[in-house]
Image (cartoon, rainbow over all chains, first blue to last red):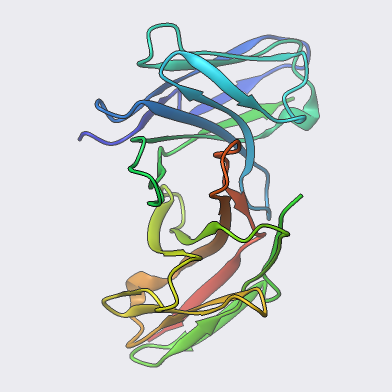
Length: 117
Length: 116
């Protein structure tokens, strides 16, 4: 399977603990995105990388959240001092920078479901 | 800020029939892209169809087509000959094409049930 992969698929943690998620994009894709999806809602944008550069961050990405893409390949999303409100599905997507005037397609991974007790 | 509204939380359709899902959006931009994504239960989101705002012709992908009304800021999805495998959450999404933001802005989704 050469799609976007995310690990772990499920994570249960206690409030106050730190968690880290990993995303492996489609191999030739240079863009990588993180979104958060809570129950009954559409995904909300968190952050975006082009290669290793983090080019856009949402206001949702508080100082407890940090994302990295050190070599322009896989990415990690860390949440420090988790809160119950962080419980959600964290989705990763990747795309290839398109030609001008053409929309790139974001391909989504299966997500990591985080439950904070 | 752009917003996307899907006014139908749930819809149902009989197998082989046609259903239309509604989406409206709010933006002050003139150049943008619109998407419909499908999220089956416990499975990952996949792109159904996309539309560039500068194109007047409505996009079509097999049984899926859109009705893009730029002046009305409306972007509905029509599914013809509905199949059981079409059952899923459907999300409408907006993306700016004017540089800067690459993010997708999603609506809350419409849950589609296909009845045999």
